[in-house]
Length: 223
Image (cartoon, rainbow, N blue to C red; front, side, top):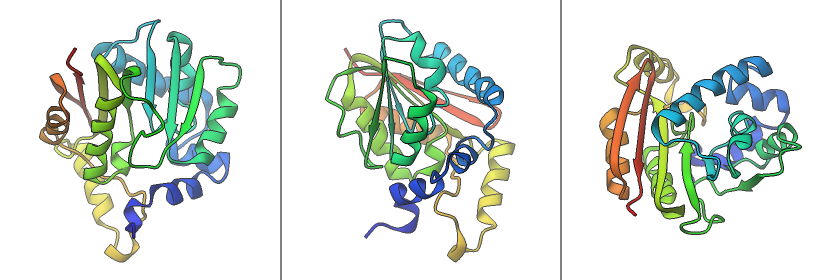
């Protein structure tokens, strides 16, 4: 039996029951201008780490309402958005209407099984690890390695426990009584954790970086 904190599909389908609720839990707001501004930061990170090439097939783990996909899909050959919540994908489909190179894929919450081996140029996962238990984070890193082509690139991020902002987030989550913790309560990561996941999964040229509340990690699947 799944624990309350790991029943991701039930949790996120409930949180995305309406478009308003979906936006609130993905970004905290639904204003398109603010969404575009936050996405610009994500695109900058991707450009600086794994790169964005016009010939790329890119896959996002936990695409939500298509916050990043709406801006990223026009820059690549194919963009695949995966999410545990069919409701999230329904909202993403509306936002991404008209983009002919977009594929939306429902997943279990623990793997990328619908995606074939060695079929993707780059995989990224942003603002998702904070909602996953540690072993499920690692499972997605391993799945990213599986679906990437040789030489494929992977990027992930999470709130950094060692930062002042991350520690405040940790204390805010810790303040919930144990029997009343929301199933989507945020969890932080550390630099050694992210570094370990990527190296243990088999990635090479692994790098990590911290900036404000964030720790980011990226690596390359051996050619």
